[in-house]
Image 1 (cartoon, rainbow, N blue to C red):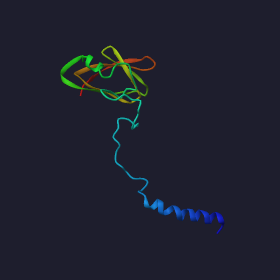
Image 2: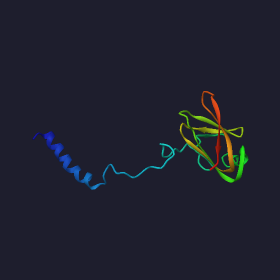
Image 3: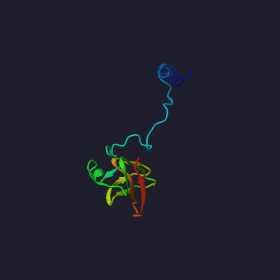
Image 4: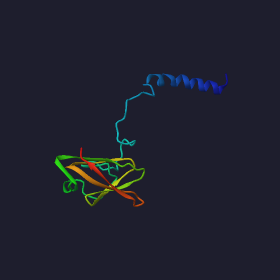
Length: 135
């Protein structure tokens, strides 16, 4: 046995008890519940207006000022997912409110219940409007 083989053999003997005593390396911890593949993004907004990467309005006051296109009774959450592979600028009630990352979900909590016209604009200025109902 050469010196190199002896060193590798001794290293394996020394390391084996430490590896054997730990948990298995590949252990299934069940599904990770997240709305996107990023578990935590400290640059996303939280609170009443969550999921925006950039906000242009006051997140505590602005949701109280908007009115739905088709009103319902009570309050609800306006939740929508960006269906594009590009950033979108979000406009509700004629006010540009922020930007959302590709395929990300945003929510505005505690707004008047009903259906809102949400305008999405891509970086190339292509824009369209969708109707989103509160949940």
